Image (tube, rainbow, N blue to C red):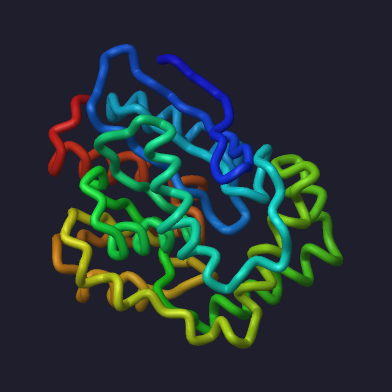
Length: 264
């Protein structure tokens, strides 16, 4: 297993990346898209384990304003996920010379994957794995994001996030938090993208997710043009890869073996 770390230069900004490449070549690359408070480092050992189990290369990168990537101005525009999906992500795939990919997104990253797959005709995208995706705004989500703001200002949450984002910590937190709590964001909705998605999709969510309900997955599954498989994990919160890593890895591996005949 070879690990490579570096930076992509995208639109004048340096975006950090990490790539795990198995010794035996595989045509398929798994591209990880992090959550609203995530980054390369917050995936921890999940990318390496995924590469070892599937035999695929696994690429993760930090969006601008996160982790070790360059900062970005605040406030973020309300359509920042569309910008990431339709403008930045295609350039990342090109910079990494990826010809066949499955996008594996978590939370905001899952929504970015949906926008990309439904908003562009990109033949490089062969499938999607969506962990805790959002396609519309729920009051449960907003309540948890309000609580996160209080925790950031009054507890050690900022210090804990600083370990991953360093100087970007305020950019990462408020760039996410302010958008979701903006009153104009209540009408945000991605359901129009779903009928255009024809590739296989795996949907994963924890039964105890405090940032979204199963309504999100049901809306996606019923409106996709292609195949949508749903997995609900008991005793699991908003982060399946952290709360139930073994089950999440097994589900992704089975999905990839079924649809793309990967060799684990």
